[in-house]
Length: 224
Image (cartoon, rainbow, N blue to C red; front, side, top):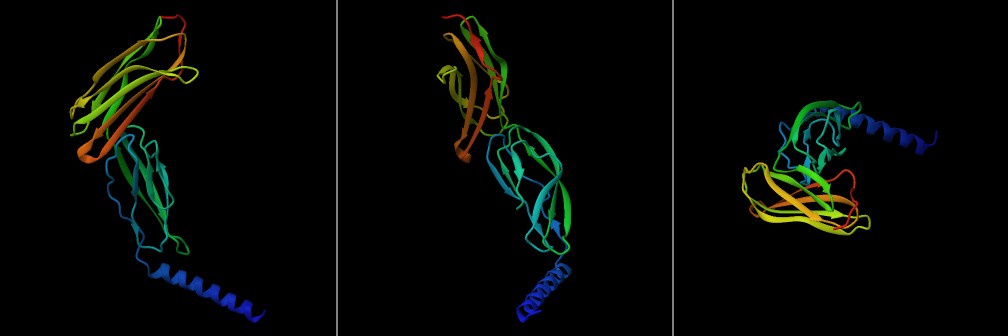
């Protein structure tokens, strides 16, 4: 073996011994997080999980349970995304370090997605002659008043949108199941109905948004 090859072997041995020594002297690997903040449906979140000990860098994964729909855990340990719906979600996160051999530890966590702004069909859109009508209900599950904008449109086959209803008002904190009817006569065609509610909380610089959509186009078969 030439001199260069010997130096490479020595360097590799030194690196392996260094990693082994670090693994032996590093404090135990632990997951620091005990509880996670409550999340809001439709609001972008980026929350880093915390570990210490072992030999960084760490690699994170979900090994049991279910994250909130719309949220994922990156290998770097960041919960990121936009939760889709309210609920309580339990799951297990696992972190591995870079020691040789690797240290590995798991922890059970919970995330609550609060029902801050709820938008639901009270009467789903239906066709009656040349009319599409129905009603939604909205709820404010927070301790803040909302500046709420609600708009619902019917979109035909060529992408033309017709407003079926519009409201802009203050929805008081704690209001449950506030009803908003909608309806409009339309020409021949097939229409997807989209409902959009946007709540602004200026004092907290927050915007919440909920969307509803009919699962299939609604046909209007007679003219106004």
